[in-house]
Image (tube, rainbow, N blue to C red; front, side, top):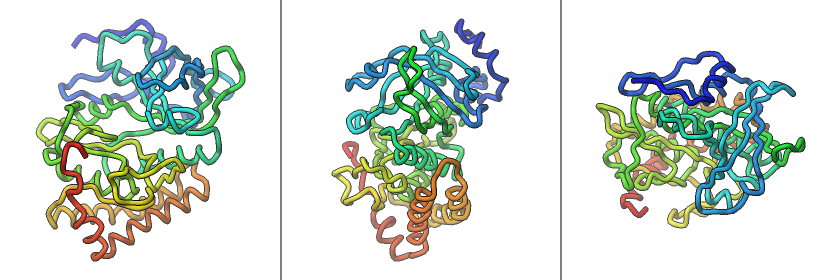
Length: 353
């Protein structure tokens, strides 16, 4: 395959060391990407300059605008790139002072679509400019890292400190904690597959082991803000020789994160996101036993990660350890497992759920 480089990439490559990149399922290597570049900075401090008033405007349409993206090393700019920025997340746009973002690391779409898709990243930022909201961001970032413990079939994340300001102004309008999420295209390439985007897809055709693992993980963190049929807060990856694999994302409405703006969906019979509710398909006794065993085997690593994960304060660690221990206490009780998981399966079995 002939590799085509957009003009701005020449300077981009000179600013960072080479990285090992994933191969696509046709054996070709994906060009260098921004997420791999971000991984090289520890800690990562980012400044984004863009028109904040325009960015905050509530529109249903996804609107892209110009911006400047900088990685800082103290007061020195270590990397600078012209980008395009857009607000995302309809609920967060309505409830938060500052919305989550998408960032395109190119001016004009490169001729290589794979490069374009890989270099468009989601950035999760604080809902409000406060220390408490910074902790909510880190709790959600931790949830992604938690799923990484179970499987490579999961989104990688990169924490960062973030400043957002209008161009030409020294003062930051937002300064806090954020994290970048690996692009769907890079995730798929890393797994040797490709994203699947049907309008409706049944969970019954998905890889059953991976799907049960995802459902049990969502139950563990107390997240019901997802749906398989319409791919709400899940991505589906097609891998040759396997059934489609479901991969979750967006965990801010979970009981583990416990955001003050999070409320359960009206179709779920729980009063608070702190309550767990299983949304998986029914499975065989053996599948349940194997899945429960996998989670129980990870208990010590899960709790250790909670104790050691950088950026969490003592209150966040205490809340999340207590919440996770509640899940493991349930798994140790066969009566509660039967009531809250096994007998609660197949609650969402229609496309309109």
